[in-house]
Length: 266
Image (cartoon, rainbow, N blue to C red):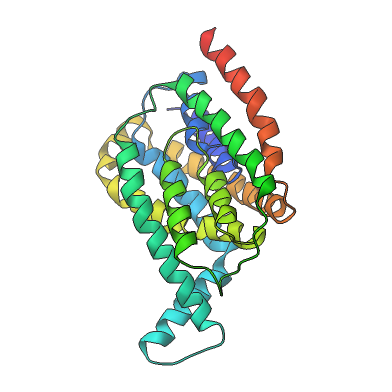
């Protein structure tokens, strides 16, 4: 993989990881269009690590509050908002457990070699985004419960399908479970943290193959591009979610699917 190819894949990953248009689907299709052969899954995971750093930076106060509440709970102390943040933590754990079970099963289907099916799944993502117009939840973290954990965990697992946007379907799941727009957007990325870290650990075996097929300079360029693009796209998405305009991204997906079908047949 060349330096330019790695940077282009990093840009695609960074922009589409947070914008609800499916990063995995775009990466697969980008490799087809750029004539890049199979790359180790660990390369994609490292691009996800770059965007994970973006999540940690943007939501650092919430993450810090969760760990502080858990720490005070261990030493039998209580601070303002601790009950809310401990409740949030356990819902994140529940959602993560469900995601692991569902996502592991779906990952065995190996859809990455079927770009036309991926393009069709992008259409499904567009439909999901359109449906978010009809969700008007009002729950916050003080009332979040098992329902939100089950629904978001299930749909995040389904987001393993290339072409299904993990961020889009997770936000939609949060809205469907009754969360407010702002909390649904934040929660979708909080539950992404353990999912990305888990994928990183599982794919560590691919490190030798990564060094042979990608190379350290190209890897660093790709990760830097993914980080910069990811920071931009996450801030853009959070603004769109807060204003109830998540459905607008479906306007991009429909012509994108048509274009991909044209490019894949020429």
